[in-house]
Every structure is written in structure tokens, then in C-alpha cells.
Length: 107
Image (cartoon, rainbow, N blue to C red; front, side, top):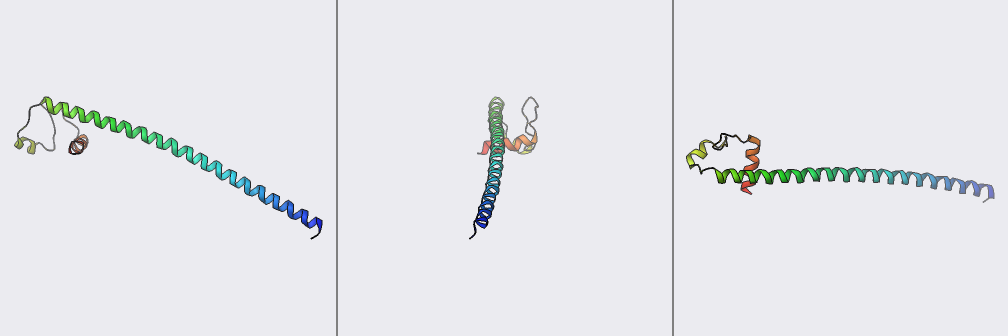
């Protein structure tokens, strides 16, 4: 093979190698950014989950305190008031919390 053709071939190989290397570096940067964003998102949701867990424990404790301080209701009263959970002070627990508290108590 003539020397000029060999030099052109080497130049082309080097150009191709540089282009592929640049593409790989770009891909690596994208992966690093994606990983960073996913870690940040995971940490955020983990914090929210722990806060929700703590809130559930606090509500469970409040429910236990309320149920231990209020007198026991008769079975006929509890079946009549299954949708409206309230104590003697006429404080109503919101419906969405009632379902949550029932799940917590049953588990």
C-alpha cells in the first residue's frame, strides 16, 4: 500500500476513534447526571416515607390514648357509629384517617 494511502487511513482511523471516544464520554456524563437525579429523587421520597411513617405512629399513639381515656362503648353503639368515629368531646376524626387507623390497628 502506498505511503499516502496509509497516512490517510491512519488519519481516518484516528478521527473515527476520537468521535467514538467523544460519544462515549457524552454517554457517561448523561449516565452520571441520571444517577445523580435518581439518587436525589430516591432520598426525597425516602424522607417523605419516613415522615409519613412517623405521622402514622403518632396517630396510632393518639388513637391509643383516646381509646384508653374514653369509656368502652357497647357493641350496639359501635355498630351504629361505624362510619362516624368520635369520642366524648364530640371531636370527629376525618374519614380518611379512620381507614388508616383501622388498618394500623388491625396489623
